Length: 337
Image (tube, rainbow, N blue to C red; front, side, top):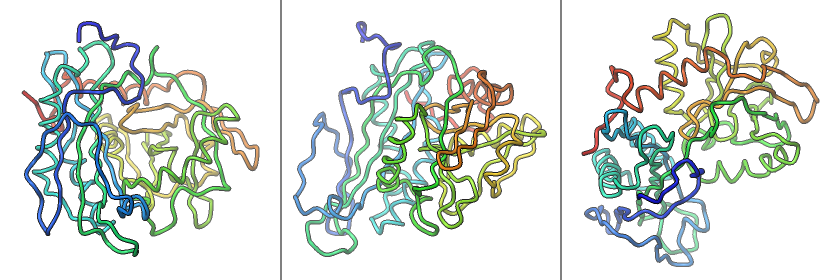
């Protein structure tokens, strides 16, 4: 990869050498298939195409300061994939299958793992969907699990900077007791219209409120929300919020830093009281929020043009573990050789 300009990479698909697949047919999973084929052949009446029987995951592998390759919290992604499969009545792959597939993909595409110091990483996308052909609405008897990867660039090219966020009260991301707590494609399709509205107004992300009362903060685009105040790390607790692995990691690091961690309902009226707030997820780790605009009430909440000191400390602490600059005392990283 001598000619690769790692600094120019965005968050887009870049072809790599290999992906791996498992087929579920006749009540059992196949052995792992390794292929260089980027395409799949599917019946036009496959259940995933008509009824949204589809789920996915996202995680990263990093080349560390010591040259070693670390896959971050792959076991947590595997458990969440199982949870999503169960929710969609899809066959559940074993943890071993999912983890082995991710490790195999990293190992076989090692030349695409960006060098240390570029800020880039190797993004893995496990995706699973029902492939049974039919017309009725019913669980799929057949499924395909694929794990592929793509190198992606640093989310913030010139250093971590606050983003602008808009609240949309007219659209909901997920219904109460719906599929908001699992990583299924329909949740993301439902967010596109709000996202476009926000982008037209110059905002990069959308904040969603709870669908029942529109009083409480739920998610921030495709990421979890957190707020900092009075020595506390506060993040929403809701059955329709995706359990973010990045947020789970940040909660532990926040506690290690001496912050009190609170998972609870956060009224939108609490926004003016936060000293810092941000969105967190695999893509950026932390996207600090500089301004929030309510598209319906015209209320504006400002947090400054620079990243807050607590958010920056959390961001650096997590990146230090991912890149091997700090001790991984919780065993979050899996080494791939």
